[in-house]
Length: 248
Image: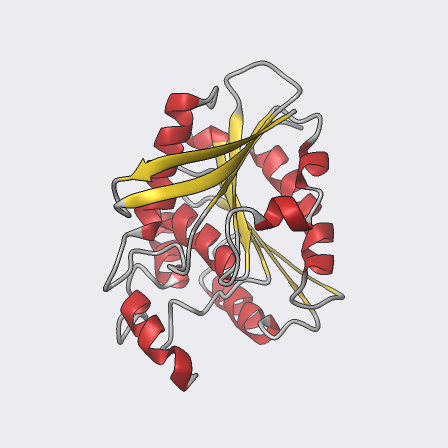
């Protein structure tokens, strides 16, 4: 298994960006790829620093890409860069051009935590023809449906989502409905800790998916919004993706 730190110029963001790429020690190329997204206050190094992600994917013929999403919520910002296309199109194209990654929907999956949990579904549902599965841990699932109430964050969130995000491409329910109608719904798994401050949002989102008859997995576990929780449950996400990718 090899860990590469990669830097390239993003034409969409118009700046140099960094990422980690974990290359597998098993199987034959070309490989499937798992894009794993960080939360609001972190960067591309955090999964590698705070979890045993390399050990968790050992033995799988799977490339893991840990990109930097900055603070853009992995969506096409109303006043700013198109982080959705950056994660959903530009980075996979770069990876598939420079690493032994298979360029196919059936070989791409995505997951993340908190902001990255929202982002994983935002990208997978927004580019439903490019991703086979998506997972969210402790996700900010309603971030793209409603204005931010916190006064200190209102200006930032308005720049990201605009004044009325519900029903737009920031809205995960809107995107899920569209993907279902196109018969391109990725396989979805969502989990959240019972002591997490985002638990109520996750429950509301789960209930809304059920009302829309959007097939998905949803589970709650003991724990909060922290790395003790994510270190445990990212392993379940890897198993979920491995099945969707037919690696197991």
